Length: 207
Image (tube, rainbow, N blue to C red; front, top):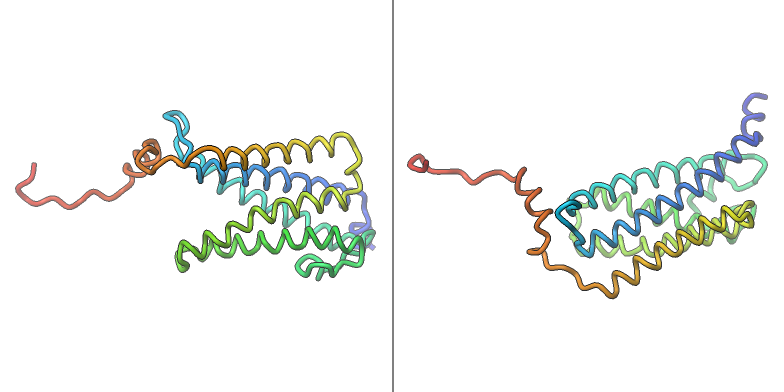
């Protein structure tokens, strides 16, 4: 009875919806930071190493909240989504199309995580090709949230969607218009990395 009460509780529903919106916000921020990192944007006060570290940490948080969202969705008995729907698109027994879009986004995120963990064993071209899928994962997640979210009609939820949409659109336009800075101009990153790079061996006669 305790398990049944938990899977049918309103708190579980709130956690599912909140984690979904938070994961969308974090995914949006991850995409924007990825664009900033690719453009090699850096200033003396904001080196590229900071953007790279922030991008990775936000991406990890996005995966964590996405896991919470999927987990609470499949165990909530009020909404018959089903366990398979968490990984197999269009397998949901509830709101099949919109949930299927969310599942596609989850599958892409899993591919991104797996290839990141195996990056040392992959060519850079292959890894980069897979990570281009991030541009497909975000609109799928956005459409899923707007289409299947029970609170999508609320003004604050629409505000979240609008802000996320404007952030990604602005980042994409900036990426297309701003030329990529050559590696030699990314001084803050190079200087930070050189601090931890091994120094060349010296001969005994050197001072």
